[in-house]
Amino acid sequence: MHLKLRVWRQAGPTATGAFESYDMPEVSAEMSFLELIDELNEKLIEANKEPVAFDHDCREGICGSCSMMINGQAHGPSRGTATCQLFLRKFVDGSEITVEPWRAGAFPVIRDLSTDRTALDHIIESGGFISAPTGSAPDANLILVPKEVADAAMDAAACIGCGACVAACPNSAAQLFTAAKVAHLNLLPQGQPERWNRVQNMVDTMESYFGSCTNHGECEKACPKEISIDFIALLNKDYLKAQWKNRKLESQRG
Amino acid sequence: MPELTTEDDRAGADDASRLAREVGPPVPPSPRDKPFLVRFYGSAVGKKSVMALTGIMLLGFVLVHMIGNLKIYLGASHLNEYGEWLRMIGEPALPRTVFLWLLRIGLIGAFAFHIHSAYSLTRMNQRARPVKYQSHREYVAANFASRTMRWTGIIVGLFIIFHLADLTWGFANPDFVRGSVYANAIHSFSRVPVAIIYIVANIALGIHIFHGSWSMFQSLGLNNPRFNIWRRYFAVGFAALITVGNVSMPLMVVTGVVK
Ligand code: FES
Image 1 (cartoon, rainbow over the protein chains, first blue to last red):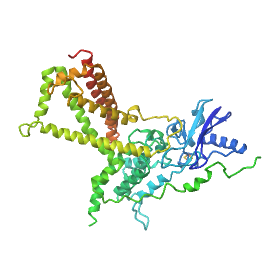
Image 2: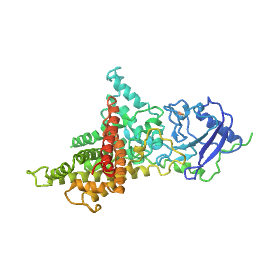
Image 3: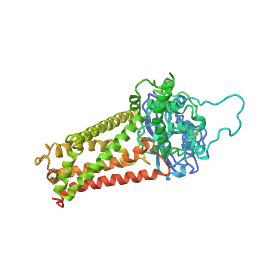
Image 4: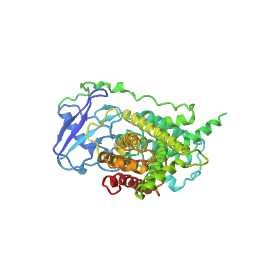
């Protein structure tokens, strides 16, 4: 098939960027979107031009590296897939595809399509540890977890931290990411001792980098793991509760 | 085979290392020394629940206000009597209009918090994306209502000032007579431009309610997969009820059905 690409080129964090058009006259419909960029880069290298910088690693939708705004949608038009799982057969032959990096104050562009997503790591760091007994190995199934709870925690833990939720959100909020990360520990018995501090610290850190959630629901549709905004409601509820609980806990300090 | 260069000589290319974690070190957990409510309102999640709670108060007001005003269809005496009754609630335990004023003060407070939190969250969200998307954004879930909240909110806010000037204080209404609720409304709505203002503003209100009365459940964490679909039904129903009820009054008067 024949595709035209409009790719955001930016030499460095402080450089001004612009779209550049490339013609890809012969590509296979079975290629993934990242392979299309690979192919473009081969052509650029052959012409002794600078290849397009983009993040990628596993190429099977589990690492969360790939990050592109394709035709105005995070990870492109197919639902529940990362850019690496998006195939060219999703596009109309002869069409033009616009590719842009994630845009958010907390995600500065490093070069071309590659952005610095360290802020998401800071949210994780502020969540801290879970207390777990060390020493001799505990018996299996010592802590029983209801099936439904385990399933819900697993759904939340599916987050690969790509930042598509932030990219898709009209407010650049990282609510879905934070909600998923908070929920997968807060739902489980192992996460209970630090539950209220975890949600408080992670939300506070999130708010120092990102915008606020106004319940558009864009994040849920952009998420390659289709994590539900139900987790955002859970996050809000836990945050509200944490205000009371932490107050109580503090008063115990004496 | 052409020679490959790893050096990028485009301007600004070497700044990547300077970016070197410009996003900074992790933020230390916020000190928990401020009074609890101040701390709570200081957070965006806290502000959203304040928006939801004040939103619920305002929804309650809008509903009662509409039900009361629909008495316009029962005729002058009913509507005027209702207006008089509002001033009398609480009598004789409370002096005349005291209860009404308590309600009004509560409403003004709710408005103040609703607007202040909306304003500061909007500013926060604008700061969160200093460089906008340079290509067309394709929205999948965000609807017209959710994306125009601040505009419909501003329209409704300005309208309320006009509405008070028109039918409460009376200086935007040349035929205003204090206490004759029915006649004032009829005089006001029979002016075509005024009727249009009322109709447009109430449609904006309906759109605002459509997103708000769904969104408030999320903000307060009221979520249960079994009932979630009802949150949408509720929002559609509430928004439709208010819009139809409120728009009908100026429409019926300006078209001469109610005189
Ligand atoms: S490259 Fe790993 S998720 Fe796409």
